Amino acid sequence: MKYKVGDKVKIRKDLKFGEQYGTHDIVPSMEELAGDTVTIKKIDMDGPDECYVMEEVGPWKVFTDEMIDSKVEVTE
Image 1 (cartoon, rainbow, N blue to C red):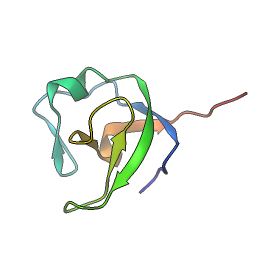
Image 2 (spheres, rainbow, N blue to C red):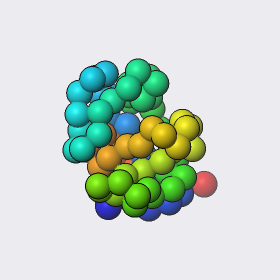
Image 3 (tube, one colour):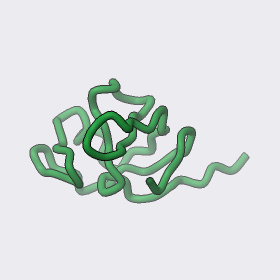
Image 4 (cartoon, rainbow, N blue to C red):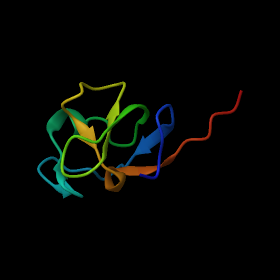
């Protein structure tokens, strides 16, 4: 896993509904987050691979490293 809980990350702009990134497919509500910055709430290790649960969507929609563009550095 490239990221950790609490990291703010930018979702790839080019996510497409129905496409597979790693071992997970994109659903419409995930595609709506394309290009947005989200916060990692949890790392889910229950499935065939590790994936991320984001604060901005329900726990049944998980993101893989392939769906994330980059970490967003937070400055205060």
